[in-house]
Length: 358
Image 1 (tube, rainbow, N blue to C red):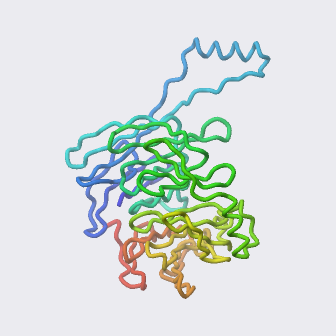
Image 2 (cartoon, rainbow, N blue to C red):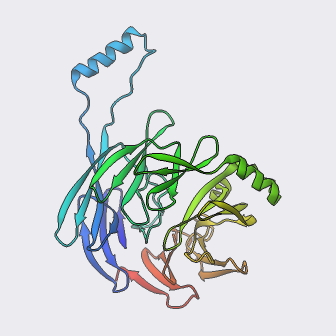
Image 3 (spheres, one colour):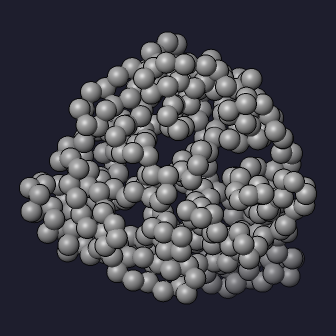
């Protein structure tokens, strides 16, 4: 587990932590830890670097073009910052530079009135919702995105074996990895296609017409165009589900449809699934983990739903409501934040112990 601890706005440290033996294995300085991969272990990390502005001649040329056109023609300003990515061999302490990506990822981080927040990444789950690094199941590749001109986005592929970064020409927005080499992508017309990152080819998976027909057959009154994908890691690969992402974010009710492998056949899980805040499905698909909606509304509690019976249980009762528990599944237990520390509790509510600080 990588744990990032911060005090204030600028004081931040990242630690590689052994959960089972409860000890710190190392600390990363002058960078941001992304993930540990491979055996022997390598660390993918990043560092923000400033990018020199255009020289004075280019600036004068841009101003002249703007003046001549009466302000109607304005060329975009250059990126003033980028992120440099590195692979660090944790045994040899040898860094390998992959490349730079212009712009900066806009990460949504937990905010709470406490002296320290913690963010972690377990297994192969992508928990940061905006332009995180999303690894392929075999950790050969990662992809990430950046804001481009206007409302468009650029996407980049990190090849962690060839040690390089390249820009991808992806049709619309990639959701996550279908397998080791294909990204599942939703197009602008509502179709879902597979993008092969090796040969840069696109193949169809599910058309918007097929989704609309399934809605009618299943008696769903929702609009098919509202269907969006989210992925859940099952220990081997991603399980993909369709739902109304806005209703999911609101912790409201919505349809829940699973994409079956290998051909993406649609299977109705629930016509009205009740979503919750900070939620996760476990690897078996039998349990649903969540916290309270917001500060003052059981945000520090930890709750577990049995998806076979629909029964909700309280694993950790809410106390002060002044912070967020941010629970995550870890093997046959749950890791969560409480009293400015990381705790672990069994799925049956037993063995509730603090794991960090040790």
